[in-house]
Image 1 (cartoon, rainbow, N blue to C red):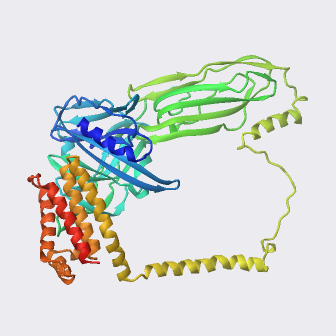
Image 2 (cartoon, rainbow, N blue to C red; image 1 turned 180 degrees about the vertical axis):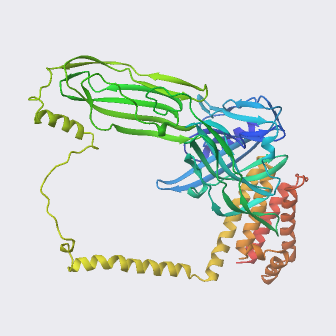
Image 3 (cartoon, one colour; image 1 turned 90 degrees about the vertical axis):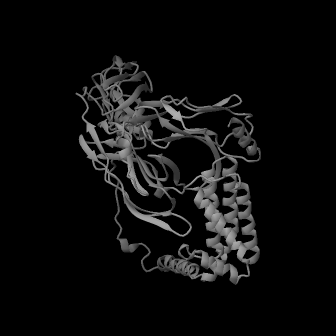
Length: 581
């Protein structure tokens, strides 16, 4: 396998890709003892000049590896505001069966190129007796919501994954109705409606292999205690059973329950932090004049419910004043582990009385759900020297106020009210009755008319133009998918090979012959071939290829002739191209 991996990297020497990354994922985070999971190690955009790679993956303690790992690779291109980006991904897949119940942590996988090492994150998998398996319906197609935890504290992050499963190859999904999150705050990590890259995978459940499509992945934070239920989501799935039949179903997912527990007795000045955090502070200057403003910055960093935190409590010496609300710099992002990053609070403070003071230390009490206890993070303390006498009423004049005002306004989010004279204008005084007014009003209407005519013209393209376009694209699409099929064949992924080959033939015939899926039957295809003067044997070869691909998806067959099979497909496409222009 390592030699195959090395060969894949040699191919990259003629291409350029984006940043190198190693990711690991499992098909399910909770399974029963009679189920399988797939551990997929993805090497994204490996360097072209890194030399022979060294691969390291977990020992998978508590699991039995079912056969040798399989390997396949694919490329993708995506258009964005900054141009076209490309990704080359090599995936190594391990099929695992648990030996007994328990919670297992797979250590990070890594790939080393020369002196540079790239590592994935560790993954935790929970194995239960049998309840998890019974939660999967024994149906050809179903929808399911999986949650990472069934019990959590207030504010503790919970990951929810929305997926649909099919025993057949998906063709389309429609009529999607997302569920609600009553009692939770939800932060979306992935939503199929907001991306062009659908997450398609496979899972083995109770010995049966399903194709999966991830619809949504969110992180939930409980806002109230008690047993909360996620509202089911609804969606219609359409899949292809075989060459002549399709299967569709209006799916309704399960409605998992999550118990949200109240936090234990909260410490004084608790700001709602649940997770694992640190706190730091710094001041703008430690020697000031009485009445002068200075900055105090407090930074909270960590992961958990960072984005939900309240303003930290600031305990100041007597005669120290805080002006207004602090400026907040939010550098948090939501991941599967919850919100992580930092919140920075910038306070403007004024000291009124001379003397030497100690500022801080400032404390942050947070609840750690892993230990079930409150923990405290503490900052350093700061010595402040205030020079000058006590400010009297006479000295606290407009000059001193202006100093503080200028300091505060430098923050750009605080402004004082002014009483400048204001002259009101009647709205009809502005350009009404002028030529430029009517000219400006007419241009948008004129442009709208042109746009509508262009749209109608585009929609009124004749069926013959559309059919001609489909025929021109048919060969390119088929060659591309056939290339993917050959790649899967070389990688030893026979299931993927048959899927890609079957898809390429179906797509080619549909576009080349300008047929709907409902019209694609043996008689219709042979009639079109006959009308265009093609030999009857070509149709027979096409159906032979499709039948063999379909049979291979449900029963093991002799795979030694796969090279001949893909060669037949290429020959058929070439003959049809010559016969049908």
